[in-house]
Every structure is written in structure tokens, then in C-alpha cells.
Length: 440
Image 1 (cartoon, helix red, strand yellow):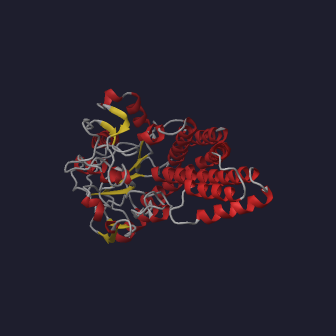
Image 2 (tube, rainbow, N blue to C red):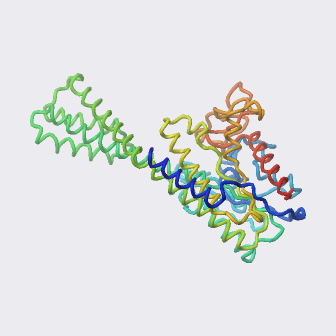
Image 3 (cartoon, rainbow, N blue to C red):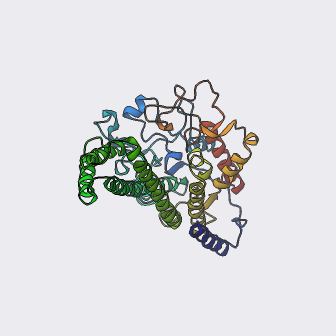
């Protein structure tokens, strides 16, 4: 992971240079603002119900937490703290696969009077987000990136923000998740390629005529690969059967070691691919952080916003999702998050009078390290159990949380999203930072 460490060192040096190594400089005190409206941009952490339609609504879901009549995410709590109306989604809908579930196809509907643009799966500028058709999900989340969210708002409001808006921005998590998913898919594909090439060679070597058997087994693998419902097991079976026809012994003691050797070679190839290509994701995340900072600078502050609360990425490496992975994967995730957060902070340097940078990363690290101090009973497991969409908190509610367990003070609803209680702590921290700035 030397490349990761080098990238982080370069980015850290940039922060220290650009920011003087400190964030202690605060703008001069100003009169406490009176906010007239709340606007929010981002992803599932701030989504107040973009997908609370169709099958998702029928399953008692709609927000990325433990859903319920009183469950609120942090932006909803912030609106209440500022005495503003409860936020509502600026757009709703699903563009999923009707063959899997007709409820995944719900017309996209705009709500011009609603200012909560954040939606699950959204990235900073890339429309391919987790849960979208483009990412291979039958659910069909809209995943409009933040750049499009901001553009949509400006189009509605005559190209400007009001000086009495409070604007919340938090994004980047889905950039990390999708990049990691793409890396995993590519690693798996590389491992599969090596597995089958090794398998074909091994089986052919045990056949009557290896020179003839190799192409025959390869042809069987190619045919089985495109068959409906093909899996590694079914393709392997086709390869073995082809080898039998080429004179290989039917004794399991012959084919067993060949298959195991192919599996070992494939596993190693996949791991090697991930190790070689993972570090490149750090600068990609740093670029996403820069892009979000540019949006804040040019399209939010530059278009009239005077009160922008920019929240950095929490410590994703401490999530149950990350903790279930290898130590090297956790290190990569930590590097990606740090790369994003550093570039984000550098990118808004000089905007302190209009942008409040909230360090949620450090706060979540403290919470995981000292759970009892923050009232948590668990910071390592998901509160949500199995549901009809796997274990996602999007359709999690009291009927499908862990059976027989009080999860009210859990930190995580699913493997990455916060519970209602964790959302209250996020909102409290943001509120404290805004009060310290004199904005609340």
C-alpha cells in the first residue's frame, strides 16, 4: 500500500500548506441569521424519502435507517432545530426492473416546493451510483449526482440561492462504495479468467491427447459460460465432462486436485489484481473531493448562498461493511476517505465566512472508540436483519430488526447507514458547530 501512503502524504502536505496546518481561524462574529428555508444536497445519509414509493413504501421503508413513524435523519432534525418546516424530497421515483418486481418501476415525479435533493446512491458527479440500473441493480435508484442536484435547484430558483437559505452538503460515500464495488468486480473477473485457464490446462494435461483436449475443453467452457443461469460450478462441470470425453480418468482423486489448484490460482490472481489496482482509487477519491469543493465554491457560494454547512465523510473504515473485509481493504478504504476529506477541505479554503466545514470523520472515530460516552450499546453490528431487499436499511423497520435485541442505541442500521439514534448525534454535533459559529 505504499502508493496509498504516498498519496495521503502528498494530500496532507497540501492541506498544511493551504490551511496553515490549522482550522482555528474563524470569521468575525456576525448577527445571528434567520433562516427562511433549508436546502440539502447529497446521498442516502441525507435522503428524506426519494424512494419511498412503490415496493419500497409497501415494505415500510423509504429512508436509510430503521424506518418508523418517528425515525428522522439528521437533516430532518436540523430543520426542526432551526424552526423550519420538515424537509421533503425534491424528486421521487424508481426506474428498476419490472420483471423482478413491478414495484421497482415508479414514475419520476418532481416536487418544486421541496428542497431536499439528496438521494440514495448519489455520487458527486458520476451518475453511476450504488442501487442504480447502471450499477446492475434491479431496484433502479435514480442516483442523480450532486452536480445535477445543484443544477436542478438553480433552475427552479432562477439561477441563485437565497441569502436566507441554510444549505447542507454531504456526499462522497457512494463514490467510495461504487469504486470499491467496481474494483471487486474487476478482481473477481480476473480471478475467474485465471481459474478457468488453469482448469483447462490441468484437465487437458490429464487427457489422452492434451493438444486435442485443450481446445475441446475450452470450447465446452465457452458454451457453458453463456448458458442461462451459468455459474462457476456449472461451467466447471462442463469442463470436466469435456475432459472425460477426451480420455481423462473419471476418478475424483484425479480431477479434485486440478480443480483445487485452479481455485487457488484464481483466488491469488483476484487478490493480486485488487492489491495492484486498489491504491489508484485514493487519487480518484481525492478528485471527487475536489469536485465537491468546486461545486460548493462555484455553484453554491458562487450563486449567492451565505450559509453552507459542508460535512465531510464519516470514518467508513469503521463501518461493519469495512470491518468484514481484510485488513488491507480496510486500509484502502481509510486512504480513500482521507484522500476525499483532505481534498474537500483544501478546496474550500478561503470560504470560511460562508462555509462551515464540519468534521464528522473525527467525530465518528471518537464514537467508535468510546461508544459508552455517546450512549451506544453497539458500534460494530447492524441493527437490521434480513429483509426482502437483503439487509438494506432502505426497507428496514421494527418488524425486521435483530430478533430479541434492543437496537435503539445501535450505531449502524445496516452495514453503512446510521440508526435514528446515530442520526440524532450527527444532528447534535452539526448543531453545536453551527451554534459555535453563531448560525443557530
